Length: 377
Image (cartoon, rainbow, N blue to C red; front, top):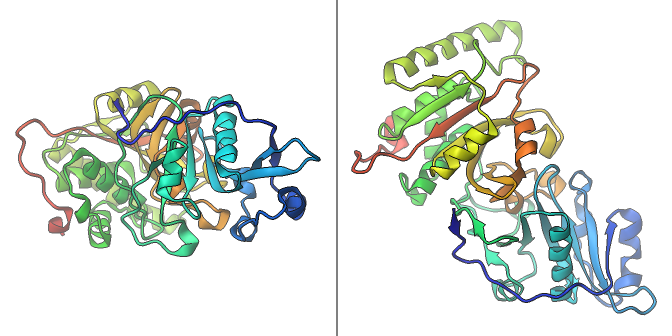
């Protein structure tokens, strides 16, 4: 664990007359009367944020229920952060109230989307800039800037954020970002060609299953120690395919197991525990973890995320996908703290509840230079 290089401390007292209420159509219609001349951004009402528990944290002047400032706050379910979409009016007071609200819930972090706040103003109230995504951003997919304030002293260092450019390349992206975070791959090498090339070597059409992904990682970076974790004997991630399409995918998975043996990539058949995940992170390893999106996004789809750090009570992940239709953006997906118990529950995939992961260790000191995945064609 290392101290965050950008962490800023800002003095704050208890918020005065702070109020926390759900944000819904009734609340929205009452905002002009409560906030007076302070305009509310149109974006507050153009996206259905109901899946992420939208609420207002407001501060008042103590006179007639008027608010001097307010922040629209959301968060993915089963996580350990709050996100400020915007703050209006007395912004420092509203933000201080959000931070106090997060502390009161024992959360790890507050984030702030950079739609309407400058880096200087964010820094004044203790927020550090997030590095913008390496993938191009459109207005609908999130702000150009974002900020974070950790609510404790020690946090993990941040990997670059790269959003998957297809619906099926999450496994490849987590591996690439892990290697960039480890210094094995340059951030400049993270692009769509690299993403699709590694996916092509790992895919079970269209998904990446754990053994195939682990084999592809070893092929791309032969000096990186790789362990595959899979507590299932046979092929996985086939339930949603028609019967006639399962057989040939099962053949490919058996071939991947054979290749793992030939390459010396171990397959650990015991269930990967949260204790083991934290142990790997303590050793500065990376864990590519397969989980279901049911808890965070509301639909049961297998999805790869990168576990790269830990804070008290939560594991810090990077998720290569964000659900723009619910107001979810890269600011949510990057440096996302998830409580241990929630992550443990999410990482039970399919009706069988198997757990799949790939652990990537650090290359030995003086190891050979690692191959660019593009060259593996």
